[in-house]
Length: 362
Length: 165
Length: 113
Image 1: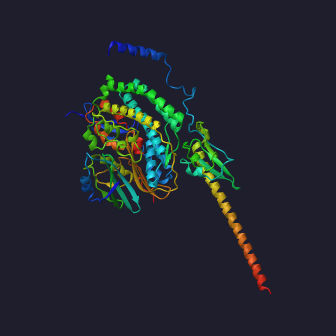
Image 2: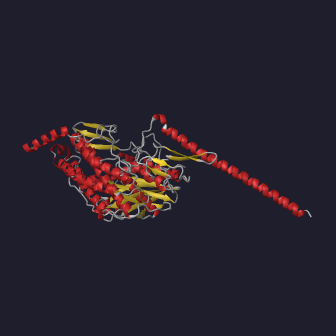
Image 3: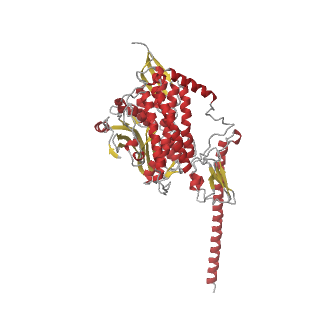
């Protein structure tokens, strides 16, 4: 038996963007086992939502759980609160929510690809993708009025309307983005240096993904067709606006990149369909009721399935709110995915998991 | 990599030398701000009906009303605590009393003591309102007492009147 | 959502009978305080369209030892570790200290009496 070494990575590390700690047991550069610690940023948001804030204010609080998927959190909370209030929201509000979720998915997926290319040591691609991503941030700012914290969904509908010049701008910018995305697809598919780091590393099989209940692009790249947009349509009509399931086969870093890039094409398609067929209606359904009973909601955030549980007691303040972020489900799979890889490819693998620790620890 | 492809890359690299940078030189150039940017919240005192709904809905507590002993309200707003969610504008029953501009907020400075100063002001404002309410209650009670005394006096007088032949 | 009542004794058998790796996925565990009792919930969802959710729940007094389901659902250890730290519930084979620092307050998400 050769000598084993324990190498810690994190919570502060040059290749980590989030406070995350892994302890690798290696044997000649090869990882044998991994232990993870993900909770460095517990902020007690669930407790604040159930004690300090009124239920209408909570949709702004949960937006602060995560900066990247803030719209997914606010929308999921708004939906669960609407279930507690027995509220049907206007059609236009549903479509606008989907529009912003998909634009958010584009920028989040591109950010993940940026991290993968940077952590694999490809700085030029990092800069290029960052440049191409800027359009989505500006569009989100034009639609929601804010660059990061959108505060777009509120209990009962959406806060702002999509104005006609902004809609034209969205369509025009997406059209200009498509050739850029083709270029990125070509680089991520065929670039030889990038494939050295990406192909075959961080591999996870479909069976393992199933056994460990992995969600999101991480699971889809391994061939496990799990997407909330494919499974429920009672809250947001995803199939109507042209959702398609994208799955990969290999389950390695390369497959994850390709799944993300292909999902951006689907998102662009969805956004164009929404803008072309946006129904006219009110934006908000008003109610004076208080939340009562318990309800659950699932929503597909950029990183996978987001789950909200809420319980009301006919007062302004909720009894209990439980948030399950996508990365939380992926921890078990993340730990498994390292086994058998070289220690040198760890940064690229971590980035390809797209972990969001502030979501997980809340 | 073949020869033509290498040539293409070389030409592209040469072209990049004379291309404009994609970044904005921020303090000297203005970055992108959309037309309906969520900027500072403005308040129009002449239209306000002092219902305090904006204060009640504000998630971070960036709006507070204080009250002096004559019952006159004063509006306080903290741009550094505000999250620009527009919830106050949406809930306002009187259109135009509180509204959002596209003006971005300026940076908070240390000299402004924006956190602790605001917390103290918030407490003060709540206290001032409680003091006014207590004063009002005391006055009302005094008035009621006086009215009671008055009515008792009249009854007494009436009783005197009826008793005397 | 289907809600199925279970008990600390029957939990493992119930989950083993219900859970099929290729059909369901485990979402998360949750605890809700209901006066004196505490309700512990296990959420599952299937891969079909339309997906149906199943919730196993039990009502126990705080301090009862809850059996672990990691023998059936291997990824459940994350949810169990989180719940035992944040809600201060005792779960079999789960040590406290995964989620919070050792010197932090026990069960920060519990209601303050």
